[in-house]
Length: 172
Image 1 (tube, rainbow, N blue to C red):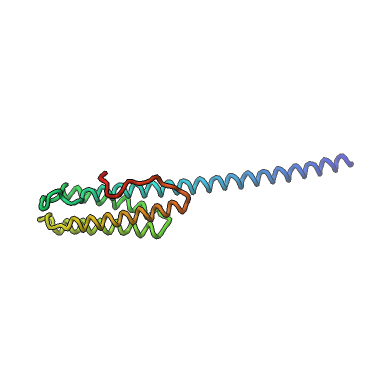
Image 2: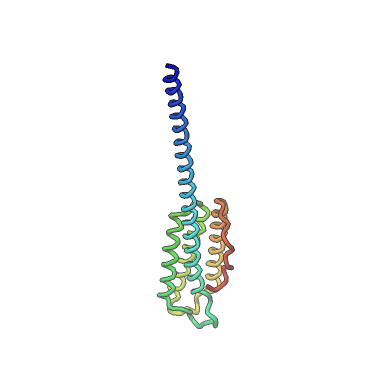
């Protein structure tokens, strides 16, 4: 009888230990999945921010002031429009993945500035020499610097240390 009671107690203890090990393994797996999900989310944000900056800088480079005053646009207006649309599409993704109101606001400012620049170019389409190139370039550069700073701050708050980004005034 003692042997039977000992076996029952031993079986119960074995069951409880196994149950505890299963619970701990499940907890570790869930923590690992949460960590992977957070890492993937951060990677998506980083990629979206980098893509948006790339497209917005291409647009900015396209609207740099002409080399000679009065020489007109450096590239055709339809190409500038296409660059603006691609920056807008990349900016839409930023709004979907962003985790910071400051980053969203800075992205919105870049997109509004691009819209204002395109509007100014189209208003003066007949005489591109009248486009205030320096002023428009300064506005877009300031908006890009602000987006870069806010997105870096957001990513850093999540433990990411992005590589140094080239100066926003460099030609890509």
